[in-house]
Image (cartoon, rainbow, N blue to C red; front, side, top):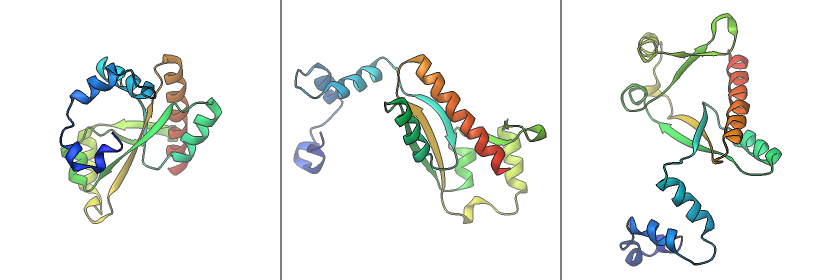
Length: 162
């Protein structure tokens, strides 16, 4: 597939059947592709761990190195305006916890009210990035450990920034 994307004549023949062909292929080197296809078919998708307003690449690399395997990965979602936060995405909003401990989830209505009272809006700002961390392991203990680790980091980041 990596060679087909550069060849429009071959690319136009790709469709969803490629997944079935890869899954049933006996060609060597397709183990990872077969595992991914199997997870998609069984709806065993990556588990979301946490969301951050900052890039966590270094922390993910450090965590994966400590584990000796790459089980945490990061995706980035780009948001260009505050209207997108409220209209088009399932976004979770946070605020500092009462007494300065940790964070609390903010209801959508409260977030809208806070945004309407803000002196400046995101409309004039650069695009907003949200970094979403996923665990690629199917092991429940590994997922739980990764979630706990990055939740603790998020709470430290949130309380340090407030």
